[in-house]
Image (cartoon, rainbow, N blue to C red):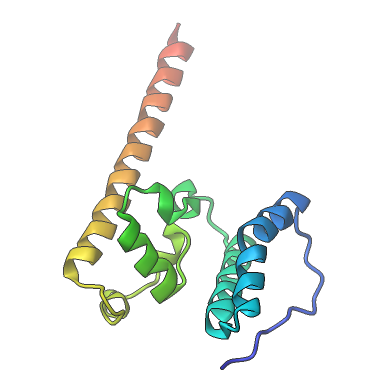
Length: 144
């Protein structure tokens, strides 16, 4: 089992982010440790670390990348495979993920990969249309 890396540098984290992480993962990690399920506890710690790195390292501000996978309209089974098998929480985690790595996960086939990408593309189109509508309304308003 790999070691858990604890950051030693000081990082400014908003108190609401800390409360959110504690609420979402604290009880699950505690329960997994109490049950002796160290593998699950490690997975949860990895998810927390991924989320923290994702929030601190991101340089682009595309709101779609910040969207939780649970909100893009995929099935619960698909979401569980992505979370448990690949430790993915956000759409942005798919950005650099090769399809071959997704297909290597147990119970993940071509249909599941298609479902995920169709949901992401659908969200991108919806968001793009909202942006275009807002820009056209603003342009029409400025003409008046």
